[in-house]
Image (cartoon, rainbow, N blue to C red; front, side, top):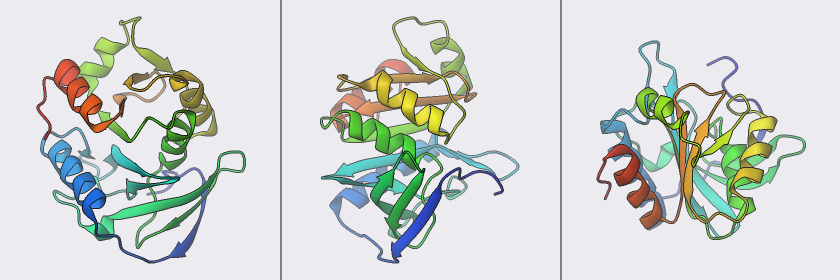
Length: 194
């Protein structure tokens, strides 16, 4: 899709990863797809992404995979290196990285205790969060340097939380440990994740 990815990327290898962490990421993403929180609009444009940290790298769902009911390891990329200044990503995998890869990097880079990030779309929740002053609120267009920088500042010293993306209609991020994310989905979305 034209204009979805707003950074440069360099593929280091076409390795496909099939390990426990990737399987857990795929399972979580598939649960969210069944709930239409990570999916695609009628015009085919995908939305939402999920990532898990692994040491200094992270695995993330590939760009424009929202229309797939079930992902496979080929639909996951590993982000190896990120340059948020020049908006450059080095990755390995068979697909292009998610358009929000730089944003995920900035969140992970701001706090080593964050292991999981879910960016999903839900208009009802997004609208409700816009009135909740206790929720983290950030500005910036999806995939932009501005958004990535604002996310980094907003989550500094926070181990978990919910983020309202003011300039990204329907966009919500939940981050933290896996148990934090499960708890926050239950609280804010009334959704039981495994």
